[in-house]
Amino acid sequence: MIRAALVGAVLAGPAAAEITGARYAEPTSAYAHGAVDGGEYARLIIETQLESHGFAWTNAVFEDTVPRLADLDGDGTPEVVAVLSGFQSGARIQVFDHLGGRVVPVAASAPIGQRHRWLAVAGIADLDGDGRAEVAYVDRPHLAKVLRIVEVHRADGVWQITEEAAATGHTNHRYGAPVIEGGVFDCGNGPEIITANADWSRAQATRLEAGKLISRDMGAYTGPDSLRCR
Image (cartoon, rainbow, N blue to C red; front, side):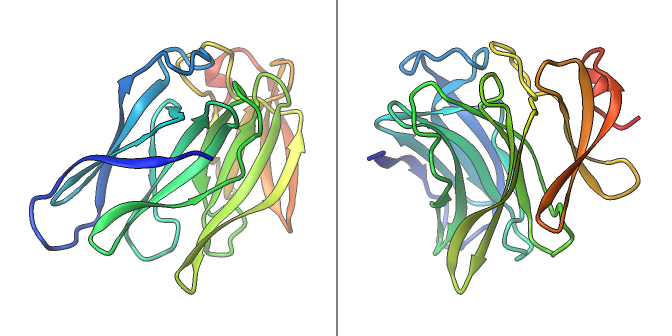
């Protein structure tokens, strides 16, 4: 079991305030994976208008390039999406929200299930036009190379993460690189997830339609700029 601890919370007043920012802190070598250059951290700091919250796990690290802010439940205020890697269970999506005057972890995807197995977030957007945000990520971009789409939402006060679609043959990160390539872009016809194919020879744009992932070829991969609108 992964155990969490709220550490170093600094309160500035009694009033609630929305989340305004987030960052990873305290680089660590405890996990010693090396998938992302300089990308393993012991703590996540989440800021609101009035306070600062720090999170650390006793048997996991934050393994990522940057935490992401997005309004997942449509209430007009952002939540935080991070990647948490358990020492035995590997990476998972971890969501934080501001509830009851404090920031708390509210939902997590199932972990990959093995140490040193990572996922690379491509982006967050309403990918199918249903008014709910999805998180697009590549599951094991150096091994399995599976693009997964999960919907993160809150219904009757309960947060849920549900997988909507998956497709093989995608990657967006080279082992040891400090950045994730591609992302979610609207190139004129709605949001698409732009990734490389499995061997980095082609660029591809993928749409979520009726619960299925439909990809189109964008031409040869010639570098990071290939994974953008053309």
